[in-house]
Length: 473
Image 1 (cartoon, one colour):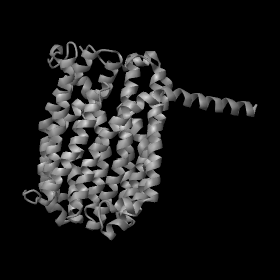
Image 2 (cartoon, rainbow, N blue to C red):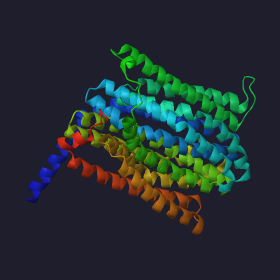
Image 3 (tube, rainbow, N blue to C red):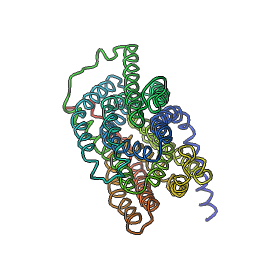
Image 4 (cartoon, rainbow, N blue to C red):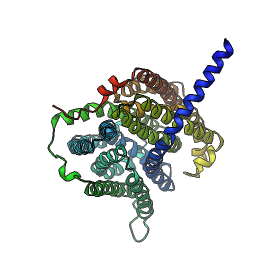
C-alpha cells in the first residue's frame, strides 16, 4: 500500500511538471523582455552608484538615500496603476481590445490626478531631511540631489501607465527598447555631468540626478510613441476610444491599485527606512549597506519581472475563464522566480568580494559588505517567492492580501527586530539586515499559502466574479 501511494505521488508530481511545460514557452516569451526591462530600470540606479562611488562613501550614501526616499513616494503613485495589470490583461484575455484602451485612458487620468499630491509630499520630505539625523557630509549632497530628481515624477507616472498597458496586451518590445536605450543615455550623461567631460561642468552627485531626470523623460516619450503607433495601425484604434472620464472606472482602478500601491510602498519603504536608520552610522557602513542593497535589488528585478508576466498570464486565463490555465501560469512563474533566486544566493556566497569590488575599492566598505551579502543570500529564495506570489495574486484580482501581509511582516515584525538587533544589541547594520530578512520570509510563506487557497477555490463561477467591470455604472 505504501509503495502504491509513493508511485501515485511520483506520478502526480511528474504529471504536474509535464503540465507546466506547455506554459513555459509563452511565460518566458513574456517574462524575458519584462525582466530585461526591470533590470534596465534597476541598472540606472546601479550605474549612478558606481559612477559616484569614485567620489567617496558620502556620495554613495547621498545618491542611495535620495533615490530610496524619492522612489518610496514615486512607487506609491506607480503602484496605484498596478490595477491595470488585472483589468487590461483580463479584458485582453476576453478579446476586448476597446476595453483595454479604455482602461489605458483612465490610467492616464489617474496619473494626472496624482501629480499635485505626490509633488507636495516630495517637497515636504526634502524640507524635513534634518529630522533623520544623517551624517552632515551626506545630508549636504542629498538635498540638492532630491530636488532635481523630484522633477521626474510626471514622466515616471506616464511611463508606468503605458508600460502596464503594453505588457498586459503582450506588446513588450517597446518597454525593453526604452529601458535599454535609456540606460545608454543615462551612462553617457553620468560620465559627462558627474565628472565634467566634453566641456560640461563637473556637477558630482547633482550630475547623476540630471542624468536620471533626462533618462526618465526619454522613457516616457518612447512608450507614448509606441502606443500611438500601435493604435494608428489597429482598426478603430485610439480614435474610437471614448476619452470621457468615467468615475466608476476610476474608482475600480483605484480600488485595485490602492492596496497594490500600499503594498509596494510598504515593502520599499521599510528598506528606505532601514537606509535612513543606517544613515546615522559611519559613512563606510552606509556605503556597504547601499551597495549590498543595490546588488540584492538587481537580483530582485528578475522575479519582479516574472511577477509582472505571471500577473498578465494569470489575468489572461481568468479573462478567458480558464481556471486550470490560471493555475499553470501561476506555478510556472513561481518556479522560474524561485530557481533564479536560488542561483543568485549561490553567487552572493561564492563571489561577495568580486561583486562588492565593482562598486568601490575601499577595503572597509568591502569588508562590511561581505557579511551583508551572506545575509542577502539567505533570503533570496523567499524574496523571489514573495515577489512572484504578489504578481500571480494580482492576476486573480487579489491586491489586498499582499498589502496586509507586508504591513504586518515588515513593519510590525521585521523592522522592529532589525532595529533592536542593530541599535539595542549592538550588531550594527548586520542586525538590521537580519530583521529585514525575517520579514521577507514571513511574507513569502503567507503569500504561498494564500495562492494555494485561492487556487483551490477558483472555478468558473469565481472567474466570473474576478472579471473586470467592463460596463461600470
